[in-house]
Image 1 (spheres, rainbow, N blue to C red):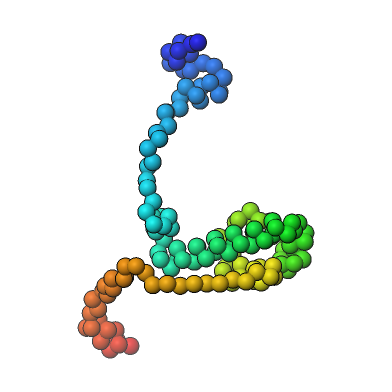
Image 2 (image 1 turned 120 degrees about the vertical axis):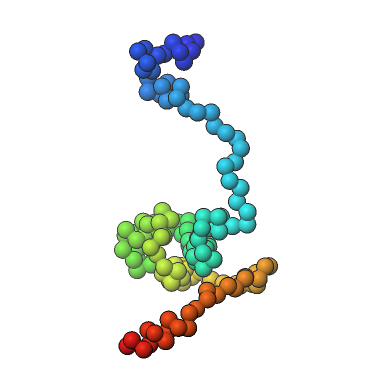
Length: 146
């Protein structure tokens, strides 16, 4: 077995691309870089409203895809059933729903005869409300200049 030093010629690595990539790889750490607490969307910097919308979309997509799989629909059948163009059906099946509204996913759910329930509950910790200080003088000046 050759050592990494023997594979160098003139400062360059010699060998197959796979062998070179193996020699250049850093050892992988088993220590996690970040531990998510509670919700991954919060950790990614989404607002609570954005995170809630993404969770709803993900839940709807999951239910839709499970039902499609359960019934064994083809893309062609889904085009007719969902009254949608083929590229949109393909994107749906691939989970590409960034530009798909919650209303559209609800429509798909309805077309697949799925019943959707939305539940809400109070947060464990109340939200702190801080309002920015408003300058009343600025409003009067703006109104007076009109």
